[in-house]
Length: 463
Figure 1: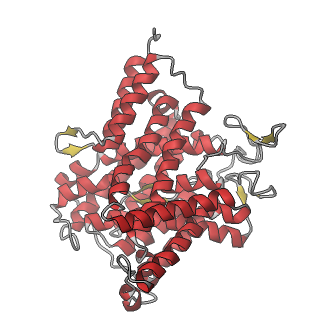
Figure 2 (figure 1 turned 180 degrees about the horizontal axis):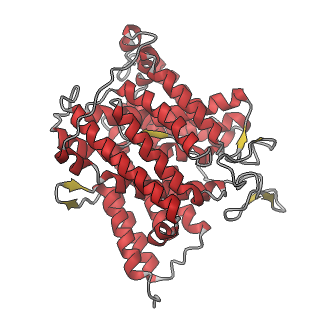
């Protein structure tokens, strides 16, 4: 599936053959208006030819459908992460919705992002709580205290960036680095996704069917239907899966018992944090992984939207940190901006932050309705895996696009080495340990990219 260059109304033009052309981030007086929130305006372009800008909004009906699609995109990971740590999945969904709306308010609606459960916390939380891997986490409160402390540190970095500016971060992480980081976020998730749909040939074929259906919607449809490619593709694949399994008896049938037993409305169980120094020491360093990961996300957003979002990175760090602290304060997971939702934006070219507010509302409703949550959880892993193949692939390509948009010169050996080492470390999930802290593949690759850039891009490169 081709990934076209996304554009906004303010900088979109048509070439002589009707193709879209774009350039770098542009000054938009409605967006850069000096106020906390941008000046909002209705989208008046053609959905087949123009992107929907950050400060534009669509009619309610289209907005709700797009919001549901974003909720679907985040759902698999936001549910999986708490299950791996022994947290309440329904509470994680509820908190993801609340935190996404918090993020919108604190960033002034200038950064299109969804906040979902962060996988960066899984290793440290398991280490801090000695979690066995199944059922509720008996030491959940200890983990919550560490996550709250991590969120507070992250928020403090956001305040520092708001005060001192983003220059020092951009020197540490120029486009050659951020492009590589964005790419490895997609590539690092690829092995897990492929393994998840390769348990048997039936699941592999159903995942392939999902990929084909989503891709077909993206290529052969127009207008609003094309923008809903993930949602429409998943619904079609779900219906086919139901007919083949529950109807014809092949593969593992969809189990609706959880849907039948679940209540329509119910509040997830809340938990109180406990602050223990050992757990805090283990979990707090996750803040620096989130900073590196989210900076890559934000750079990808800037590259896609052609809007100057870099000046608002400090707000975004602050918002994500406060949201993480808030979520853990009630028993939820730490949260982060979601690459899955950035992948959705990359292919739909709808960047309006109002969509994410509605997605947050949808998540809140799901979190407060065990029955709807159970229905979404009934989606077979093979279908979610097929959708993930598309989304994670788009994320990886978005990293390449950052290099292209910033004219990275790969005739320089320094840029070649930075990109090559980072991509292979991240894709191969190369791990380093600092004391008892596991950096993880993305963390290790990010650290390597920053160090290599500091060493090699301070001097002229001779081939």
